[in-house]
Length: 178
Image (cartoon, rainbow, N blue to C red; front, top):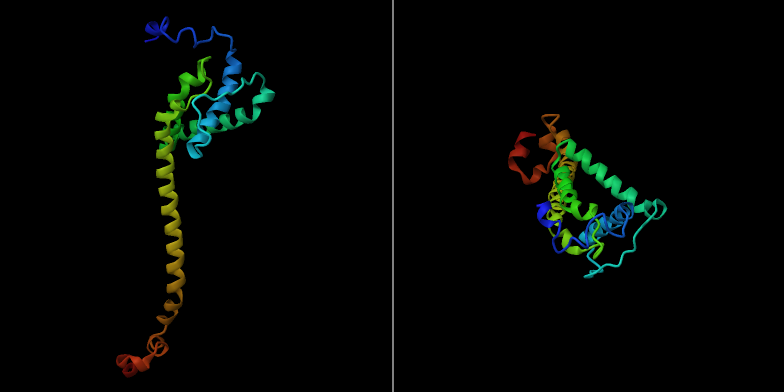
């Protein structure tokens, strides 16, 4: 596949032989990666071409570099521990790897590169949101039921309190038992 594309239509616009240094490309792609994530959750402003200047030094790129490194490390840990979210995060990085690693001078960022990785992010959000909602509903319902049943448990501690505590004037059987 590589041999077929060496002299293909994009050979003059992609690769390490161009005017962009690999370090500048990789630093800029940290910012682009976070732009992709932002557009995933807040798709504004959408554009056909993004004019993102190259970040050439660590001083320019450190906020995006740290955030991207943290996400990559978290993804690696989750993947190593065989969590589904780790697989999805690794999928995002693997799909974006060719364009994040190899310089393409015609476009620094393109939304269409996120079409396939977006499915993994959507899976993480949907399944993770379901898990959080399920955990919250369990904690809320168990707290509610415990709060409602605790006073009633005290009624069953003594045999005659259940008959006398409740309104026996509306219940003939309770009135006979007391």
